[in-house]
Length: 330
Image 1: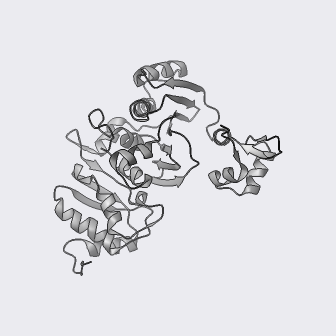
Image 2: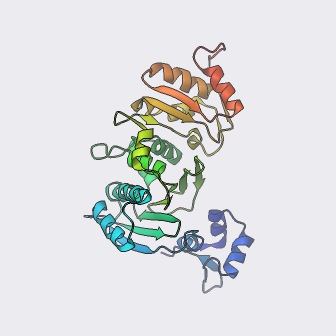
Image 3: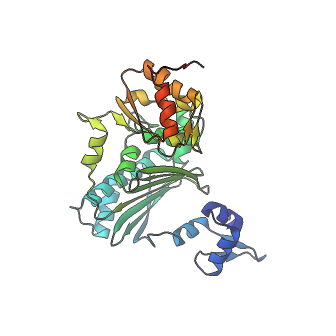
């Protein structure tokens, strides 16, 4: 089946105008072909590669998922790239790569993964691209979630897995906190965690089969896995989380009790929760009441701490906390 797409789909995927995409193709910035009928068509993966700020990968191998072990693949990769094993950034990438390849092996339902590495003067990066069902669809279907956005929210909390007998559900969570930039692209959505600016975003992406994970870290980074674990553990127990409220919705306003219930799902697994309101413009009384009063009072073992609130959100949250002098009915 021909996987090439027309110029309008490329423009939509990149967020550019059609005239801009046509100009880029004419200038050779992105590759394109002509059909026998004269129509210009594009391979979206080739377009992505042409626009990649990291340039071409220095290593690109196909890994059959059946029978593969992530530590053996890492050993092959590290040897071919001649990485300095004492660098903290290399330790972080080793952890992240092992977790992401293991997810592809155990969860994707695919047959192979393309593994790519970049080593530049300033950065170390990798991608794992499998041909499976897609991470968000897998979580949505097996956990009975309402949509893919809910699956992204669950991954951001930690301790969420479709194979609890073999996995703790911590790999994606800690990987997303350890690298400078974490991207998980699946099922028409891209979840980006940018730790250099302490922000997370969700955006639409062109549909692809399987899951693509990219992790990037500055070679000179002094971040360590021990430090990352320490931020979310107490007495070696993973008991803290920091869910991003804006991942609940493809927008910036949260108003309903149902949205609050989605946010609260599974949080009783933690003792402390930093509820991150970065990027959220407004919340409704029902959302606040359901989360900070109803859910909090029925889960006294979990401490909730709202952070990064703008004045409008702070007003609604503070007036909705237990003990505030206002009518919280409804």
